Length: 107
Image (cartoon, rainbow, N blue to C red; front, top):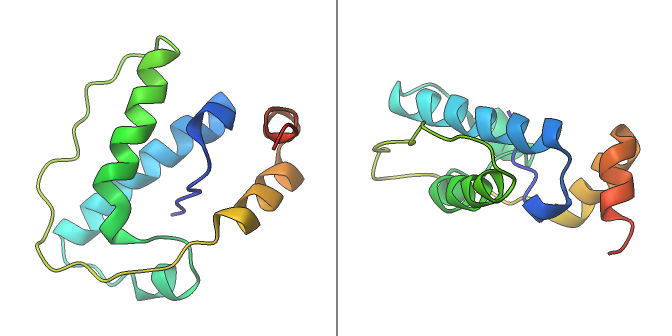
């Protein structure tokens, strides 16, 4: 699981939809009480940002004309704060994905 926290308009379709799916996976893990400390410690997720990030991704998905019918639902009240380095994630997306690299080149 990974939250990129990169401007959704700059993400390719694959990474935009991929992060959306991973947010739903994260919500499922949180609701089942699964241990996600490794993802938090490795700066892959910040559970406190799950809902606002989901909403941000959904807005971009809808702007692109994609259908969305998967609300996150309720989350546990106490969520552990994480830290995500979005600048490092931009570098990683550019390394991994030619389309994201092209979209992010104007940053």
